[in-house]
Length: 295
Image 1 (cartoon, rainbow, N blue to C red):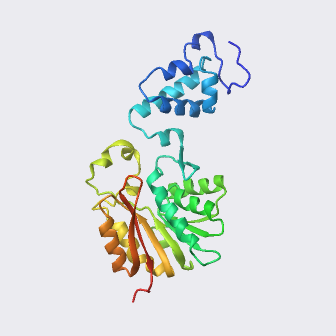
Image 2 (image 1 turned 135 degrees about the vertical axis):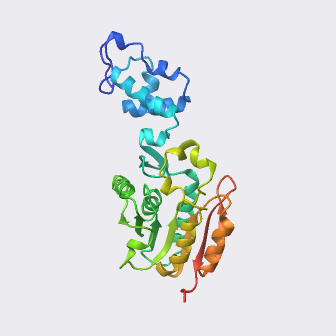
Image 3 (image 1 turned 120 degrees about the vertical axis):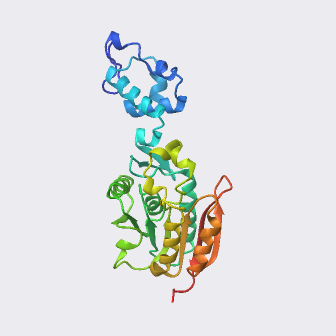
């Protein structure tokens, strides 16, 4: 069959391949229709409108094999974000892959709160620190919304930093990335007006770690191997050393950890300590403002 004008490379194929069509693959039913469409868009490199307009066109055998391989991975639970290599966050498309945490909608609350804090910051070039940046979703989103800000991001993983740098470059965000654990690589840096972090906070015995997408995500980005509070306590205790007077810290945490995190903040010398709830009504982030330096 002759390839139609506008077909992506490799479509058309022979009569022997003619049985495989978009419509036929969508009718399979083992995956939700939207996920099948997303996998087809990824394999064929086409927009959703193309799938609709060409739903009866025969598909090339190589594309069908690639789709079926991804379908099998998805049926085994592999996250869609890893299969297609993308996840939307704060209106931007971020590249993700195994080895980095998948950005989640609830983390947008942390970015929105950070931007609200920056709106009230008097500095002409406010300095922002993102600890444990992963894919760079938080740091890059802040930098895109506030190009006047100096944004620094740290991560211990070379793989994560590679993904984060790629996302910053692709989206045109100016972020300085440093390799190291939490505050460790910051020697010589000036104080920050705002620190944000989405650290590993899941308890090591939480059953969610062996369910859904979490099964495939890097364990070090999800849990501290204990009660989930180690990183939160560490960041709260050390942040005052890196904050300017009146600087602010916000951290994401688990559904039942807000009281503990508020206690960490108060013990570290933060004031105006509070927690904010996500769209599900769960206290998702906690933060406070530094009024004094630690003695």
